[in-house]
Length: 277
Image (cartoon, rainbow, N blue to C red; front, side):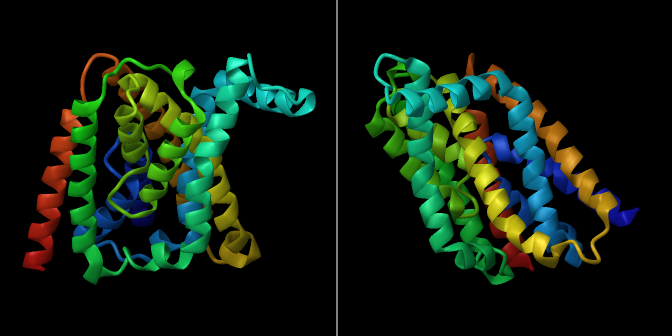
């Protein structure tokens, strides 16, 4: 029961922080460390994959109409060899372009990202990156014209957002946070920036999940309790759906200051924790 409770808590943490611009990777490092949860199960590849599959399913459920339309448009563009004049086809290719930098960097430095930030001695770097991400988000919101929509995106914009998204591999930056900030820097409306961030997250999370699953299916499930595994996934799914809905609604009427303040506050608490432990 203790392990089941921990799995559900971390599933909720993953679901909320994957989509709110506050860094899921940082929270999944900080929460177990602060609470003293040292159960090896929580650090298994199998558990990590299932949490990410929960957030992936949340994205698919919430955006299924958009995703079906984009996939159909992408296939049509290949079959007909034509993109110009079709907004949905162009958006599909822009999402594809935006995911490439992160995929390349992630594949090249996988071992570094898997070990460096999970080392207790490096927790202070997570705090620094939380604060850095907060600064970027604050500056982007102030800089942005908030006038452009997804229809206005160009290849250069997709490249900028994609390069920025690659920075989310550093725990504390936040995938949604850095991509929303990049979208704001190029003048997107807040809700449009978040929507693009979520749509591009689908192939990114799916690709990362498939890449990590190679370890799971080669024996990673051996000896793993499936009940907390599935409980964590369901918790991440439900929390993710709530986070997506709340964030899109919130950004239509307000700025990102609440997330900036939260990130700075969490960074300060992490620094205090490191100093006192």
